[in-house]
Image (spheres, rainbow, N blue to C red):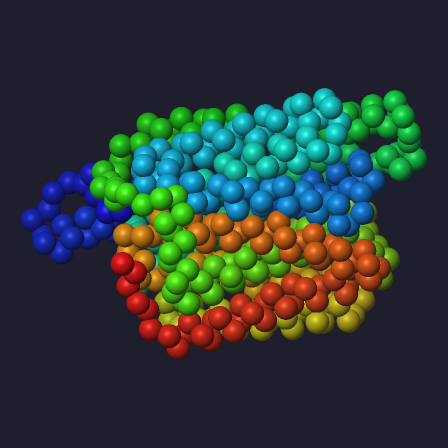
Length: 435
């Protein structure tokens, strides 16, 4: 897919060339930054909802992680269709479709609360995840295309910093709104009608939070729709919905997609266990709300790291940087799992800093040279985000079977080991242009 931008004419050939590639479209970059902020923030609210639903429905670690499975499984089903929608309708119209779908997911929390059933909450999260999938398939290649190819890793990392800004702010607010309701009364002490009434009443905080998000999303979708003709795109014709999968014939791209699967799985596993981890007596022994407030530091570390990383990636090989931060993540996990108290808690939270540049760097390394097939590649890579549906339940299963959240961190550590190896591999392999 080739893209052209409505820009003023210039007598300078170099400037005209830049305009054709969108290098002088700062308003579009701001739009993409806003999308990163939105879907990052809403995704991070899962870390707050999990302990809430775990208490309301008296779930074990494995079952509570089905929240992530429902949300991230949408990536497996809707990423390739989203890429096809981009090819058919273009980036801006597809973004509007994604935002409206996200709104529908938020509104489904109303019947979920009224029925007070765990399955309805999972359905709402699945639809919300479907909308975010569409928005993410649009955002990643678009920010890569809005500038020079050689600075794509740095630019995408900077855009991901706004994703981290959302993941830093939303959990702090969500913790106050949602986890603040976890008081002395517990669902485990109730039965029958009293239990059902408690679940309905306690889940209202979740409903109010997502209703506010639904209103905001509708406004943003309307603004995006007014900009639907901002990009004049020439769409490629032909090809089935599964045609993007032919990109997997490239080892560099295929390994990158695998690493996205593992990275998202590891990041989500750790993020969703933070509250339960910090409340343990041998770590901090604090309340759910206090622990929830500290999720801020996990995602805040990613925020700081991405702003720093956007500069570092202009100076150092992205593959080598990826290998270094993956090694750092493993080291922090080993320290956290083998210590207690403040050290154990803060080293777990510090993994967010190591995570910071991983997604954008893996995406850029895997997508290098895709050219006109950028949207297709984004669809395949977004499908790999389903790792967030697979790895967290397995991590929860390890915790349940071993009786130790410390031991369950072994699985995320293995994910980071593969990512580190890919960084070294990509730093030594030349980029081939896809056809």
